[in-house]
Image 1: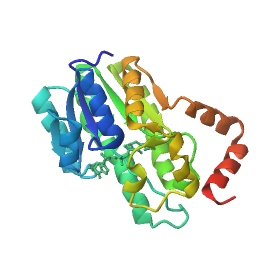
Image 2 (image 1 turned 90 degrees about the horizontal axis):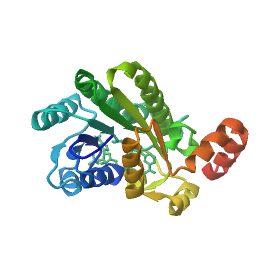
Image 3 (image 1 turned 90 degrees about the vertical axis):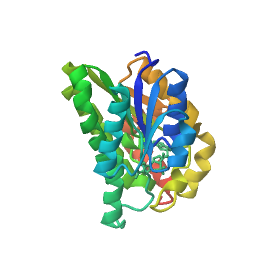
Image 4 (image 1 turned 180 degrees about the horizontal axis):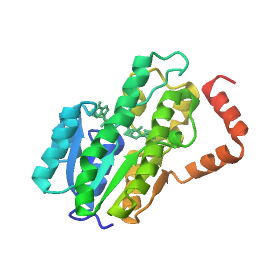
Length: 256
Ligand SMILES: NC(=O)c1ccc[n+]([C@@H]2O[C@H](COP(=O)([O-])OP(=O)(O)OC[C@H]3O[C@@H](n4cnc5c(N)ncnc54)[C@H](OP(=O)(O)O)[C@@H]3O)[C@@H](O)[C@H]2O)c1
């Protein structure tokens, strides 16, 4: 897909991967509609973009973003469902309320946005829904089990919806980043990452590199983007040697 002139609605665009996607797509000539809670962050991320600040777990916010975008641009060509939050609480003891909050943003807000946008894309027989999941949606990260579960849900949704929309001219693209240098760890309200994970930050890619991988995925009509690509090795290993990968994960998690 060519990106110049396309209308892209990006959630969680006030910082991190979402803000980097805004910069990457703007540089390709896309027209942007950005949303997240921080108005200041959105203004910085997208000078000249349409911005709609608000909490995406609220249906009112979701409706306002989509309505304003359609009013301003008349169409949405690309929806990037990127807003998300992590959790480092053990799944066996985390308050259920916290687990639900995580699901509310990472899964239900993404589904809610998709349900508002997909009918417009179907009517035009054109559009791409990009769901920013995680490598943790393909290989469970035991320091983030609850978070991984939300991303497994996103992966299943994205892959099923791809086939549901098969004949409608609407595509879905699943994005599974590995470790990306953003404020993600400090922004979580749910626990702290174990030392082994914090130390591995030096191997992380930048948000700009992640956004470039997403932009390239859009340009080549990719089904799935794993970035960095070395993440596929972990996915393959976990399928072929699951107990080996689990033992390594237990070491990093400090539960070996
Ligand atoms: N960083 C990584 O290593 C990594 C790896 C794999 C996948 N991911 C995924 O990538 C996506 C982006 O993460 P990131 O690393 O860029 O994290 P980040 O820097 O913490 O950014 C998260 C974004 O989501 C927004 N957000 C959070 N809660 C929100 C809410 N209730 N309503 C609306 N917006 C909300 C934040 O904006 P406000 O605070 O202004 O609302 C921010 O713009 C997430 O889905 C994450 O799961 C990240």
